Image (cartoon, rainbow, N blue to C red; front, side, top):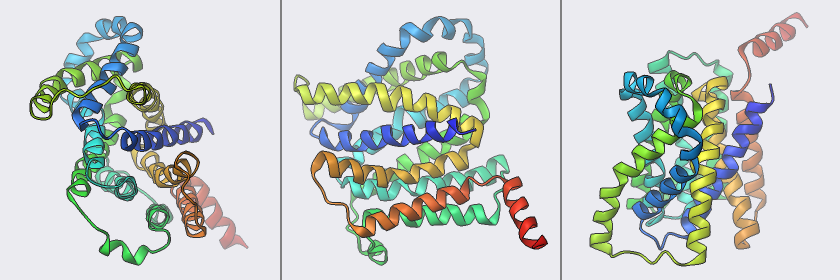
Length: 304
């Protein structure tokens, strides 16, 4: 099946745009960005999903605890942490720190879901992480410890933990809920949770001016593509590939983000970044090898 890999790459593109646009409109406060993006998403998906959500209300109630965990971790606060981080640190630092997500997800999957990965797949996880860090460090990977860390980098720890937890719960529970019904309830809950927080933010920072066409276009993108389309595709991929393998593809984010910055912001792509991109691709290929494929290759090698 090739469609899960097409879907996950679309997710990567949409989330790379999330970082680039989140940085471009970071004059807006982080909770304001998160609130309006989710309000837009709820407005779009509500006419599609509200009937299904009502029909399946008893299912939502029965599994209310895991559903609430999925909502808060993956929908409400993951991107809120990212937008908060982008207030203080660079998009490159955010991209570096996002490469930790697959490692954390793999560890949680092994602990909670008892998933088993082959040694070669663990090697793929390591390679994809190294390649992603190589890209954003322009080959100066040994200088990682000397990077300038600030509060924004530490805020990203919240995003890493949130998405890793979300991935685990999606694998276990998301199949119980109709797609659009789940998105309707998730975005609705998130809007309710964020409303008092964003009002508090406005009390201290003042109500921001949202009439800027760039802000409007950016929020519309964030509300439709990363919030809805990418989430739908990611949930389907996790159901097919599992949270560990699906999350490894997030290591393409720094690569795609760099390419986007090249065409959008006029930044240069160096040879070191190209090498890093190839390492990422190699790591993803190793990680997504099926056990049967690997066993067959080892058997063929032994027979020869």
